[in-house]
Image 1 (cartoon, rainbow, N blue to C red):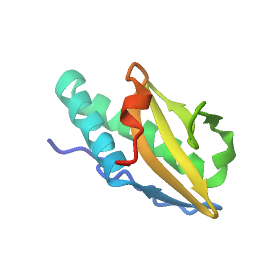
Image 2: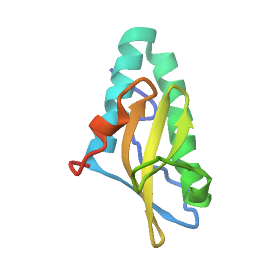
Image 3: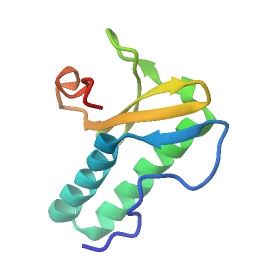
Image 4: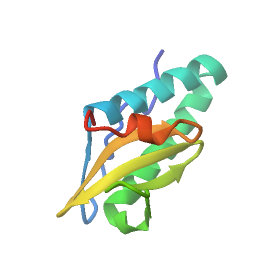
Length: 112
């Protein structure tokens, strides 16, 4: 599989630095692999660009996310997925990128 948008790390700088945890990077790649296997490379590239745009937007306006009740995390919707993150000083740290039907509480643990 050869996807155009392989890197989950945005290139354009914003007000905040952006860091993806190991699990968030795995989530990004798993999403692209599944999308490519299910709907083809063109759709996987399109979805990767959409996710990358959503990640880049967090660098400029991290406060746009909604609070996830009972946690310290914020989240934004990106297609069928939710990007979960925290803001620590001038850093936006993405902890997971999960499908909207997943049980978030199960996957948002200290492992991130």
